[in-house]
Image 1 (cartoon, rainbow, N blue to C red):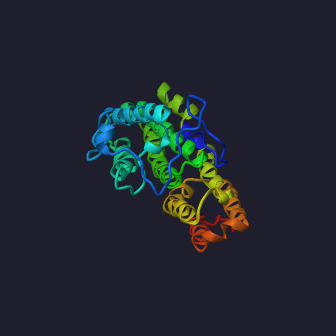
Image 2 (cartoon, rainbow, N blue to C red):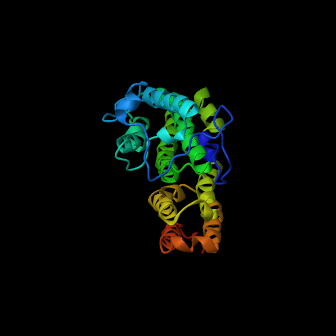
Image 3 (cartoon, rainbow, N blue to C red):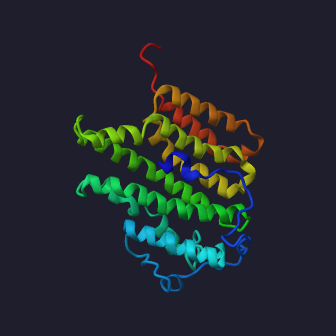
Length: 272
């Protein structure tokens, strides 16, 4: 799944360009130019005061892709913006992916929509990443989107487990899940992607960095409980390595608290 590679994003800041080959228009954080709900509605953006369906998510991704390509990243919805914060909140809302956990919905329908949902959200995340890489602000928005992905992953893992239990051993759909669905290695790669952003502290300001660690604190325990001992130990080594990076001192005590919390979740082996 795309999620296993964090939608293909990486922490390195590189110069990104729009489809025209030119850097999109720059936006100053102190001067909010993001589009309002009324402005977005002219291009078919769904109302922000209701839950967005999968089709809505796909539509929103296409609208934002078209507008940013034509006009620049400055119009993207912003975190806590008076102009567009309500749209950004809807983008981040866990209500949008509650559908995947709803056992009243046919399991096959939910499985078929995973890729559509991820494709749409990875497309939007990539826009914020491009804005971030061009120093076009939107760093906090990128952090919040990564936090949303952190919360979304366990829902998908639960769905895949539910599907595996629902299909009989002879069912070809079960074989397909075993080949393409989640496994411990894929989950480990998801977490590695999230940790990798901590390894380049120069990418963030203190507020953004600490907010990112807050998201990790909220979600990593759920992940760690699903991992075998060897994966937990490797990821703990990665986190402890981050602790020794000079630029991450700004994250204390939050990073120490995260590591301490995860260590308590690592059960002792019966032989010890």
